[in-house]
Picture (cartoon, rainbow, N blue to C red):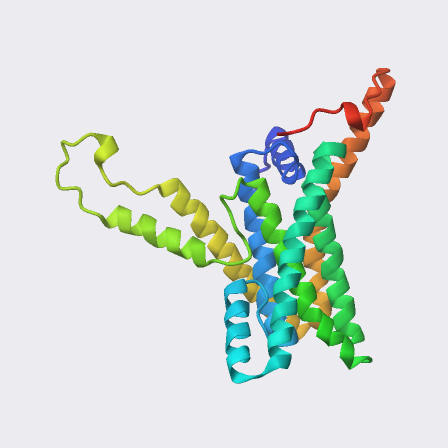
Length: 275
């Protein structure tokens, strides 16, 4: 049995502790993206078993609105409109939380929406459990899940500069196909400059494959969890989100203590603001 060096253990712990930090890197973006894809896959697949519909991809929701309008099923059409608005409201809430955090508690700006997502996941679990006593409550489940998906998708989008999405995989699979096509392309003139050759971005392909794989794994675990445990299976997913976000609140507290000890108390308005 080999023992991992203490320095490497600390390095990995530090990396996980800063996964939701305001200072970003390609590594922390990838870690957070894979975790969020895992959670989104679990919520989407588990949600189908729980409430009978997927909630992460808006394309299907909009298509269902159109179908139900033509068929005259106005109740279902109205439910689709509510789900659409809930997804948009979740994305708007993420933008509000991140921008407010950026100007007041910069180190926590990405932690706020993750904490909110964790709390709402627990609320969804409680709502589903309570629906066995009050069946009417289940009507709130789909809009709540859509809100959560919009919240998460906007968070990773703002965090990564719109490079990554985690609640749906259509764009990812498209990009994977493009890179595979570029890898299979035959460059006949090998004497041509590198800039003129068709080359696959293998690093991008690997990143997309990891995120897609985590979405699939999350879907499998989420489906198994809801099938065998019911709504209580939301608890570990919420705990995972809290494990990534709570360290940012602890780090902020430690920084304030050091500032007070050093007699350097900086008010929120004096803190630098990201552009």
